[in-house]
Length: 201
Image 1 (tube, rainbow, N blue to C red):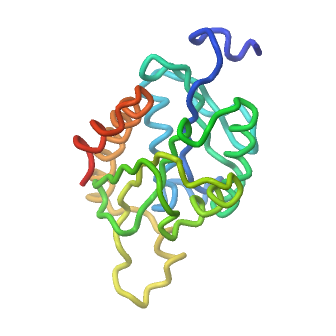
Image 2: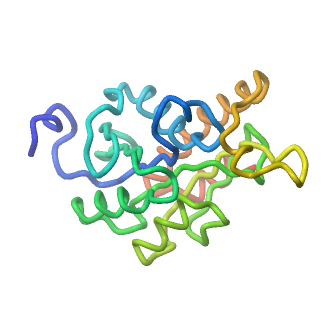
């Protein structure tokens, strides 16, 4: 086992937590990067090292969560190729989709709201679409973080998801990130029903 992992709980990685987003300064704190923000918040709360180590076409960190050894992953492939990074990490640790929690943005929910699902379709999200396509499975538990609807129907969707949050939305999102971290811990423990009951909007 690499030295990088030696200061953590013994034994293999049992769960993968993936936050979806786009790498690069120009995308920081945009709506589409809510998944990155959620994984960063989890790392912070668990006193994990910042996700700086490069592995599996992404940046990784590790923490103990819900009594399990968990790998935190932020793919560096850009959103629509997220599956390359996720499937590489899954193959390395021999993890089934049920042990891979994906956190990502949802324009159908207002900032501050969460929706937790046990599995399901990609819901039109390009990152999730690529993960399902490359893995051949839709059995991934997921936490969707609300980032708000387009201001009007003609607004370009790409422009919208790459826009930044208002000050109030940022406050609402911060609460959602706290709730997502708490929900992730329950899901890793195997208590997704409780997570859904407590945090689904």
